[in-house]
Length: 236
Image (cartoon, rainbow, N blue to C red):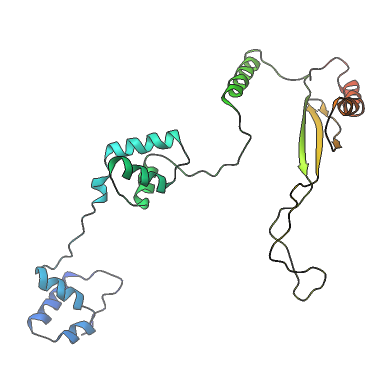
């Protein structure tokens, strides 16, 4: 009678049948063909039918103080990876745990992985100034109805993509291993304004903005817009 034990645990009846085969002094080849030779060796060493579970020592190594320090480190620097946390735990406490266990404990502490976009870095001094300005606007119930916001941006006229198309055998475009990129790409500057009453026209220029260039932009783009939309006054 062949017994299939793959993919599931053996029942108590099957285990008793194996012991019976062994007591009948059947050959090892017979038991091996039935896929039960491994259990025969376990039973011979311990005389037990149930499988003994391995004790995981990692749960004992991770104590409450380790979790408190992990939470403190992540609150101070939220870019710490599991490898960095593992290194810090080993250097300070002498605890060597796996990265998978660190990820599990970090999730239990409430830390989730978030993919964020980058933005312009603001100094601590400017953060306080901006916060004070925003609080003043809230206290004064500012609605910005007569305010025109003007800003300038720079655009590089170059392509830095890595995906391109090539037709094998075509002589129009040669397939190359590297795509050339200009060291100093051609740049243009874009200046425009927005408000509750509409937007100004867009001014595109290159070079350096000096006093003469700025006055010319105001004469051609800003002043006609103000005369049409803000005859009663405005704030810039």
